[in-house]
Image 1 (cartoon, rainbow, N blue to C red):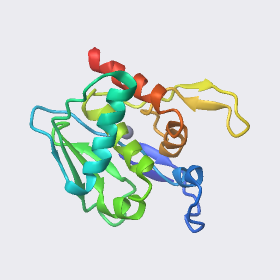
Image 2 (cartoon, rainbow, N blue to C red):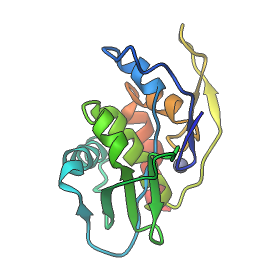
Image 3 (cartoon, helix red, strand yellow):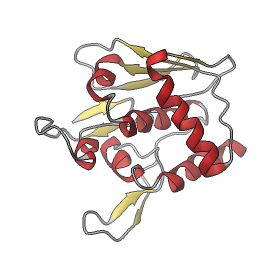
Length: 175
Ligand SMILES: [Zn+2]
């Protein structure tokens, strides 16, 4: 089991590397962090992912995210189960450089991690274990929020349901 900033993902055989996004997402995590009273400062390598999130926020919710955060790549301890953390009084999101380099080609996964951390930092959200029924041959429940603490499940459902999850998260912006 891998724990990432509070999000848990079951280990999956990464060996069969992925032409399949769902499979991949299984092996991963979500974390998002954002927050703070400072200017936005994004690592150049993360720029495109953050930009995509901002564009989707506007497209799906009409909200312009005010990400006054530092969003950076960091070296995590070799044995760290986490792939992202929100720190610095909720003003800094750090993403594991090792994780990023391994999965940067899967932009949905990186976006999912950042989005989850935005929930923690920008909105001060805790994890939610709430799920809802959902009819599918593959699974019959899904998290109601990207703040669900099982990253593989969150990422899997986020993919293809972005409009719902973006609205669910960003509505907190108004509270
Ligand atoms: Zn979390």
